[in-house]
Image (cartoon, rainbow, N blue to C red; front, side):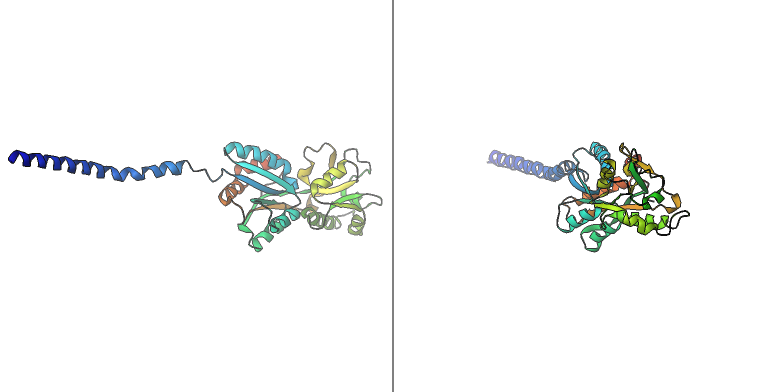
Length: 280
């Protein structure tokens, strides 16, 4: 009888030890979650659609290469046009993640209409210049020549940011010594066509379909078919470029990461290489 009792007690002891061992392993179960978190994609790793002013095209082609190299898995799809046209598309529901404008007014419209996340980010500045075809058939030597009879000026539509800047420049030039008192009216009378964006102005002047146009200084870089005409520094106009993350973006974290990168040292190095000025 005593031996049978000892046997039963031995079995119970084994069962209790086994249960204790099983219970001791339970706290290690959540260890799988850090592994799951570590495999999640980074904020910068996503495909983003970037709507950008046409004057940014060459710089953004370079920026895309550098950004994607620095952020494996990231992909930037860049669409360029006049800032005003792109803002309208976003208002109408076009699927964009980041809007990069050649002014502050158009992205501010998105902010005012609750179509953007947060406030604007200024990321660059630019200056204006006059361009002529490489062989300059109209013999334009200074911006004052834009008011000469018979000169065909290629401009942009009224809503395009470069038009606002160009009008400011023309008004400033009219106050310069040696410019005719009717310079503004004569310039406007010489406008032969209005294009959709600044890239179209450059293309048309380069093909000698016009004698001159007012564009951004950066538009003359690597453009073998046009030449710049110096603008008096005290009459020039500074264009401020601003960006915003679109409210409807499916990747707001990645969008913010790219905009921060563009306004930061790496993005600024790319932009300055194409002649853009720092935002401050």
